Amino acid sequence: FDMEQWTQGYSTVSRNEKLAFSYSTTATGLSPLTNTFTTIPGLLFTAPVATQTSVSSTTYGLNGNDPANRTSFSNYALNIPGGWASGSDLWLRWYEPEILTSGARNGIISVDNFSITAIPEPSTYAVFAGFAALGFCLLLRKRTTFR
Image (cartoon, rainbow, N blue to C red; front, top):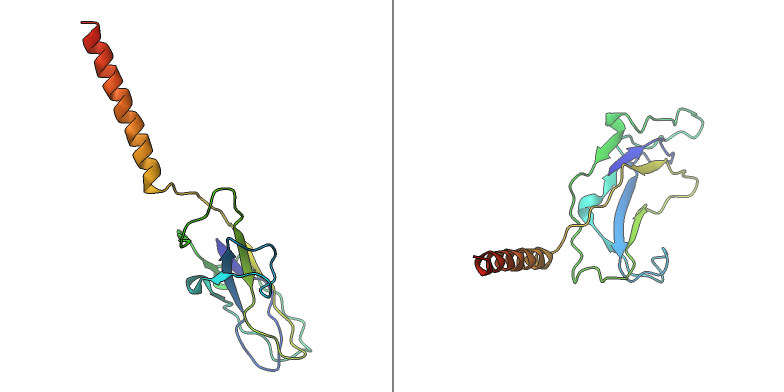
């Protein structure tokens, strides 16, 4: 997926805004007060353009598709300790880990080109190999029976 910065925020202090990623297999909502989420430090996005320190300027717009304003996170494998149980939910959450100071305005940061690919566990491959071996044995048995 890609993280894109579309606008700068403003604050009395120049800073680069951040967007963090977390997940939960037990959540019933997005609130961190009533749910447990696991944050993945390797997927922390830091906006490339710092916030403006002047609230009078109207030049907040950025092009999130510009490579200078985006970061790609590709081929990341999310390893869930204990696995993700069949029939259970998986909650994915991006959030701003910083608390804004009074009078500050967030910039706009977005997630784009997000996709999930399920990767079978090794035991799944073993089942397929077992069926293939069984089919091969049955084929050999059938050939030797008709000779």
